[in-house]
Image (cartoon, rainbow, N blue to C red; front, side, top):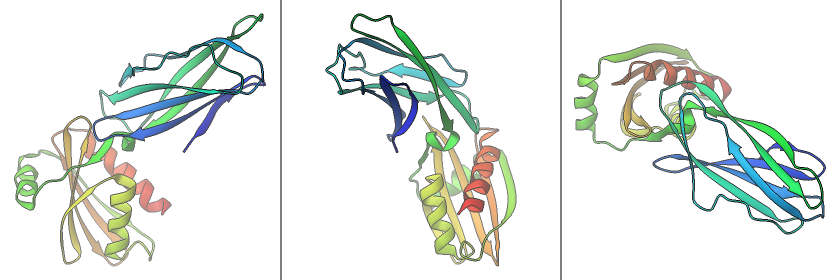
Length: 221
């Protein structure tokens, strides 16, 4: 979804996310709404803890025609797992025959922006499960509509981007990875209105963080 992050009477800056298989792409769209010629514009993202930010080709913004839209693209990678954070930056622009103006903005990012499905076999799931030492268990009370296995599965697949490895009765095996390549596994069981969740990973904080996100989406759905 395109979200406006800053504006004034002259320009509007919006952003949206592209969840590629190997990274998150952040796109900032700059719209000139003044009807006047934009002499120059530069967009900069501030260095951020936990993030590696790389400007993508074609990001420079040449002088633009009145009313036109230009975009900047950055690939973003998470260097340390976390639940939520933000990117901040500014756009510096100048209209013809006027001083330059600077507008600041920030964009929220979530752990889920960096989670992707991990497609593995049941056999490999079992091997990884036994090799991982970091885990967390939690029973989550869910609404009546979420207590059915298909409904719970749909939420986990769509909201958490988990891959369904296998379903056995009222139990499920799911897998995901934190980009670029940290796996996390989930065993879950539906019992009445309770979802028993068991996350395991090679990365110490990841099970806790994913559990937190899982509780949020289950309570919100």
